[in-house]
Length: 94
Image 1 (spheres, rainbow, N blue to C red):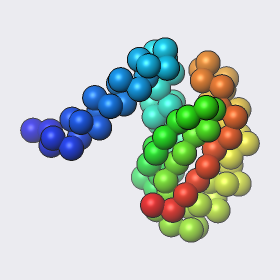
Image 2 (cartoon, rainbow, N blue to C red):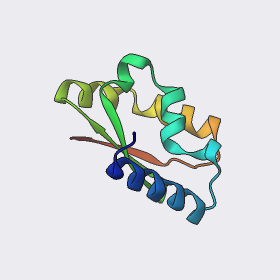
Image 3 (spheres, rainbow, N blue to C red):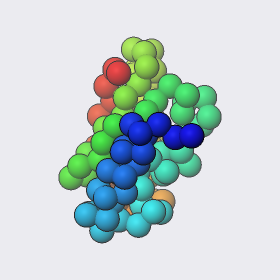
């Protein structure tokens, strides 16, 4: 059974996608899962997407550094796979 917190978060994400006119294929969280390896996905969490800025939480400073090294490749992968128009990615500890 899904927790109420998870249900509310999912509803807010869906409403946000509809508000910005994005399809399910343009969902930044889904695109991240396709662009990153399983190992990387265990250490990151989608945080937000606003005005071309993608926010991602990482679980340690080591992964923060590693993901910053891969930032440009990740931006190009995301932009080639969708119409989101990712301008920059901000990685934060969280």
